[in-house]
Image (cartoon, rainbow, N blue to C red; front, side):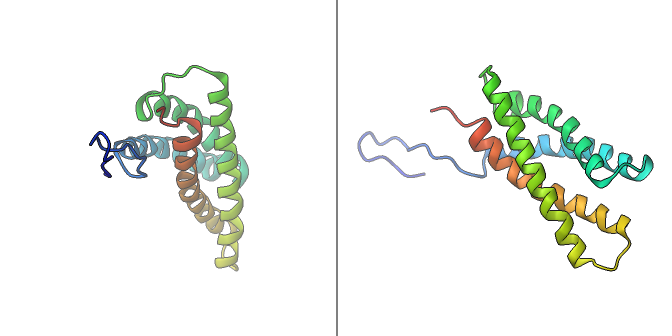
Length: 147
């Protein structure tokens, strides 16, 4: 960490990988188990569509994620509707971006394969894209570190 020459105290800087990142990963594991179960159950057992199955994952998973990340990961004390709105917007943008990119990408790569296989793989790719985008959005936009 750089040293400030004036008072010899380390400058604070935001690092992408730190204790907060580890907490986010732990919450992510919990959310992934929960959300993936919901998504694949809806798609493969109840024959819900690609979009409905993945949407159920993120609607229900996002509710769980909000509370776990707010109080455990980022330890945010803020109580405001603007934070909730930022969270919902972040989740929504990340969802449509991740899943909107994943499906056509996987369909192009796996063209000619059975649609059920392609859409299952697209959901996994969408999950991976979503996690990265969501972390950045929550860390820097929804629950930014207060100075």
